[in-house]
Length: 176
Image: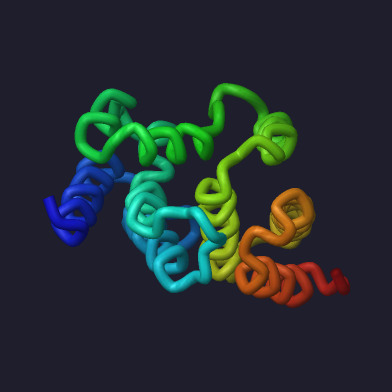
């Protein structure tokens, strides 16, 4: 199967999985977010050794294990073990408090693949581009988390890191 066909299959699976879900504040269909994350990844300068196609597919699917009923076996069967591994690295346990989820992700960041780190940065960047209309307390907390993520992943994708830091400065009003 060609890469464009795999991308369409991944996008279809994301649309099906995220059916009925909406983005907070904007009320846009949720699936728009993973597609934008995949676009950011597709345009990024990836670290040596990162397979661009696998990384784009994983970006499209990055929230499927966390937010949908899609089973891990489906990702392995349809897109291969490597794509599944990246998606799994990015999956957070929604059953624990947010601060604990973020801390667990930061704690395991040193062991994440470079592809997963790029997707995490692209995910945070896309979310930060969508901050208008959020309350000040949320924005402050989100910017603090973003700074911690950038620090833990420093060097994996400098252009994404720099763009996130510009948004932190814009929204949090602090130099980073």
